Image (cartoon, rainbow, N blue to C red):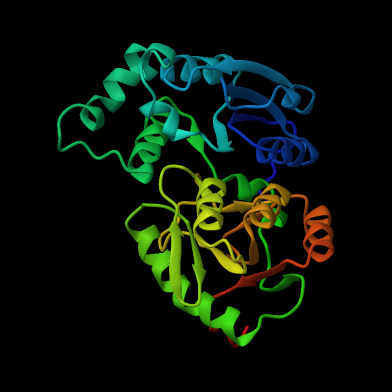
Length: 293
């Protein structure tokens, strides 16, 4: 059941993509006032009419974010949308993301010295704990909009062939091991050979790289949650943009994890996949193999 707090205020930290707008709409439909911080250079300006109050946020201004939510009476918050972590590795990145004192105090142990843990789960967990110290609890976006999570079964297109099912069975185990190491969520496979592995660049870039390496096309994209996925952040998400990237690169099959993957604009997603002959399956690997599904 969705978490609803009629007439309550919920904070939203919005990153890149359509997901923040979708979540904002779900929050307001549940009777919540949405107090939104949009990440600069990531969040879409189009989110403004979908929220009750909006302010831009430099991602390294943690103190500003805490003060904003406290000033707006927010005790529950959620975050969604991608943050392009690769930006942090561009030349002079810290001139753009100038941290405030709260950010430095919170993340100093992670960024100073060779022993600092900079994995996504570690950094985001630290981020959430910093807010909790000020009475602001972060909840999964899917608590407010559980209907966004895809159900088990054939989502679009024709059933899997034997070869496609074999590729998913082969690739799924690898994807889960990658997730356990907090490397990435997606891999691209053909004929039980790994073409590309997602790391910091993101799913779309990994798919594009697979297309460059496999000019014949026809490969399978597998996107899975981490074995111990924290649903508060970095939840696997697919939408029409994912299918557009696959089609341009030559991918034919998309396998996602049921119950742990957000599917955006489901009707449009299905129509696009059917129109272009793409196969999409949502699999619960704890109960069935890809071939059985």
